[in-house]
Length: 204
Image (tube, rainbow, N blue to C red):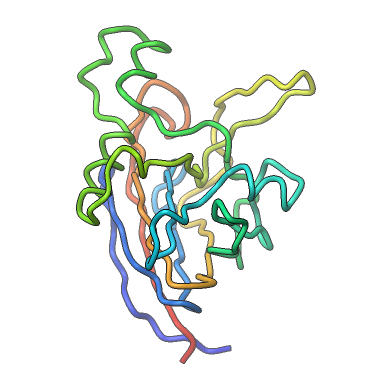
């Protein structure tokens, strides 16, 4: 099926971004420089109390990882987005977003002043009239968080590479909110945050 481009934008390293996708539109996220974690929230554009839910999504697909065919579901189990293409094959649903608080607990009080995804999300959510109560669990596209047999999680080197991408089709009108992760204390970004490109297309 042919498609036409609606929007294309490069999100700078460490920056937030948001967009409202119409039903049937496809968002392609390109890891331009490689090994960049892209933290991601999604909401029903007409009722933001219906937000991406990690619990209902993972329960429905019986897996903690997302890849082609995965359906991101809201807190009422309705479909928000479907992963329709994935050149990486491993994305995190468990690690959450970094924050000043989590940084100081994990890496020391000297990291308090470092910018984090929680601040990016709150800044971008405020543009849509939302705040802390609306900040739900997120997806970390391109972030590699393996689960050991004993249930332990790790944040290890990414398996993405420059130019690899994934695409999500909106199953209804969906507000997507991104934090291009500024984390520099663990290998989710290779300790060097970089750019991501957002491309919105729709059937021609």
